[in-house]
Image (cartoon, rainbow, N blue to C red; front, side, top):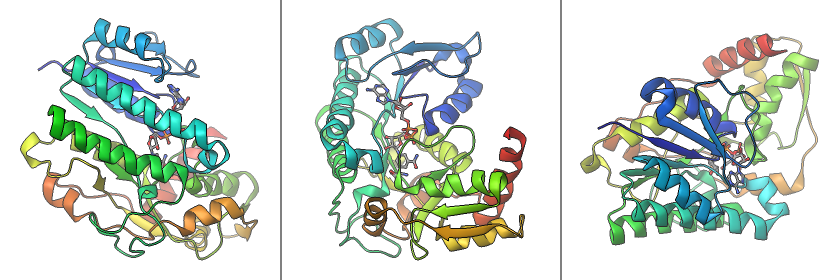
Length: 315
Ligand code: NAD
Ligand code: SER
């Protein structure tokens, strides 16, 4: 079947790189990217529309025009920003998802991707190897919206047979597009600052171990999940997914292997620290491994090497 894909929230950290891979795979003319604002760069053969995910009537017109087979709903407010604007975060994260789920049912979209997060877990979830099923008591507005979103996705699968698929992404590390206001953003900033000034003041403390993943693995996981046969998908809420876990101290040690005089200090942000402390340190992703063959390729040192090489070319 010829795929026609719409990505909502495509100019962000994940959407930018996902769009590149999907365009290479399915052809530029078959991947329609949308966001609130124009992208910084756009090739001539790329199709882009300014589209607010909350504007259901213009979103319906877009679905009507393109009759998408796949929709990726990425527009959201991330954890740290969401704590500043809880009402706005809830409205965007929930209403945006409702619009997509409803229109996907109305237009018979074959597959929908919507990302959840490790933020769907909370202080009483298992800290180590957090299982797919267990206590989930998120205490951030972002995490609450992700947990509720997961329930809605599963509900639409059960009630409307909508083939909606989801991953609980860990913190995503990348160099092409800056992250959009998350608690794990320190682990991106640290690489840029290591090259710019050989020093970085982390906003999370030295004990903050969090699950992380390099962008090429995250994009590959997303597409592998979307391409997996329907009968292999046993989870319709959201899949746990893992690659690596590290603290600020450990990422600094990895950077020092390439930049020996790099120095790490701390300027802890209380709000972000509280968010980080509520999340698991590591994730058990055995359902993703068993159901659709997930396996990460990058570990901390190979990611560090690739990040520093690519950022050096940008500066
Ligand atoms: P981002 O903040 O970098 O990008 C989000 C994009 O959505 C931005 O380009 C923004 O302009 C757009 N947007 C905001 N409001 C919009 C609206 N009303 N209509 C249309 N577009 C709008 O986020 P990201 O890191 O690319 O994350 C994408 C998804 O993945 C989000 O759902 C996020 O919760 C999830 N996620 C990300 C991470 C991560 O570490 N990056 C981890 C877990 C989950
Ligand atoms: N990286 C994201 C954040 O920190 C996790 O969903 O908000």
